[in-house]
Length: 406
Ligand SMILES: [Zn+2]
Image (cartoon, rainbow, N blue to C red; front, side, top):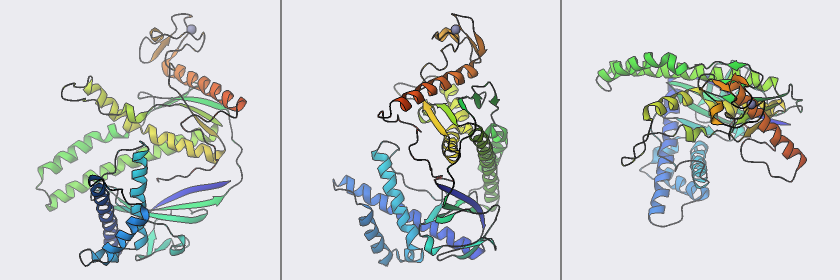
């Protein structure tokens, strides 16, 4: 089976390379925004928007015009990839998977992508790689890259530059280990398994929130763009990157352990996006529980459930296992013992007590058991009736999954 995997490293550019990378990222952002403005203009005039080929033609014009001749200094492939990204953003928008494409801001996900492996040289022995118009770049070689290089993304985060190497390789069809498990994701316990074990949340955000607030306040007291302001800003960035690193580490470790020990993982099909939608409401109809909701929003986003689910999905795929999303109906209100469904079963947030048979258990464990049962039922349906189309969610039909974003 084919396995796609991305490997990410920190780059160690020299001054010239760093300036070049800033310029390339800037050129890509410029092209993206200019093309987006063009498409919006087309829409306002009632014209059809351009396709990728049309945008590439425009790009050539811009590179040749005297006004934006500096665009010709940037490698052309990454600029074209930016147009591809814009196309995808529009596709996702029309498919109602995302909001309409927005203009890019400086310093927000600065990156550019080299799509052609023929232009890339990877010298792992000497911890360096060659990229067009940048030359040989050194990187922190923390692990071996496996497989053949497909494409490379260079990105900047918190003042550091990174390279993400997307690879492809042939691996033996894995035999999944372990049985089926249901997982209930929550705020007080990050994940509760149907076997009764649970994982404490990391809450990296909470741990750092005081330090972050202090650093932000210190920054706001400085004169903007002064040297002291820049120092304060670097401090804020450092705390942000520390939070991100701690969370990524936690999510990866957790999802790896679970995916290595279970063949089937059932998970509630929660719409994290809906749950974390802002609560304020409109001016005529102000939202209720704004404070509580925003607290919950923060907790949910801090937990990284969406990222956790994405990691579980592709890691289970690597192990030959399955991730199954089940509808979240009544999972917290059904008694696993007698099947009685009632809101009264759940006296408090943490405690479950069946009003019909008196079964008592932790509410999150009950949720996980119900999720596992719903997953079993769904699995039986799909196996016995192969003609039934797989329901929406994470049911996979192909065994290889890409780790698109590193
Ligand atoms: Zn009961």
